[in-house]
Length: 420
Picture 1: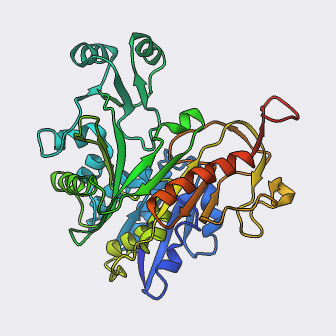
Picture 2 (picture 1 turned 30 degrees about the horizontal axis):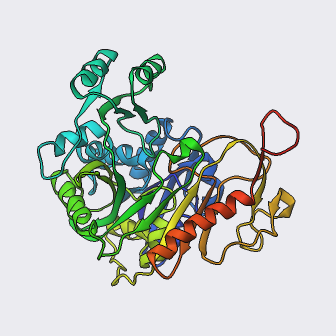
């Protein structure tokens, strides 16, 4: 029996590795976060850890398991696992992404060092090692600037600094880890998602953000909408993503999620790229829109299994992620499954799911206390929405967001009743 070691920082419903590998002769050995362990408990080899992102027993156990089962491949789809998986492959001499490549896709300064002076425009940037560096950068480039952690995802810890008061506020309570400072880029943000297999880009498509990646800071939703090939930005975004992949030490097998701006003066400017599938509901949207499961196909590529990719049969679909508010959730719309959250937990079974919704993910339940949005990829409610055209989908995303707001009830955390 053959084995693959899987760093599984996702719920089983999203990544049913045993189902994907059924009939292949390959058995997944699962290393996962404690909160996801129950979903994988029916599998023969499951090891779960609290504080998964920082718990170094994850690496120790993964190394032991990889040797014990003589694994042929290591698979990891979460940002927190990119480097630890690469280090393990390198240590064991396994194929796939190794450390230098992983760091280039994870460390935003190393990433831009690879791209600076290349075919894609990159904003001015610098590793932020002290307040002196921040002051020197602002003196050279002016306000506004952006400060962000070098290795986080989902805009976690990112701050837009528009003036000296903002800078003082940031310096008084800075991000504790390594950070970078870069020039602020105005414009519409897009992302390009795809798959590399056998060293070739086998799927690639650009998408437009509705709202933006920092919307969660204002308790507002963010959505993703595919561009049609006729869109004037389509080709330049695809070419930009291919150019970035060519400049970076791209592994022979990887999903990718790249972000770009198109500025008011019509420049294409690089933001960042990750060697993984996009967060939020992006993978689910791609599955509904193109009939392609990027995570499954990426796993097959890592394991040397034949691809099941056919010619994509496109149908318009978009993704919507709604963050929690600050307070206690009292009522949540049912998910349309007939069981969902259920009336017993305070879900509003009478709030009929809009007919344009194709997939629902609810990550909380009534009675839970929340403290607003944490990052763009973490959400309270996620929806895949369809329509006859991209314009229909955009309108339906707005409609579902409004429906959710109308059928959700909150109260202040320090209150025993009422609404918020």
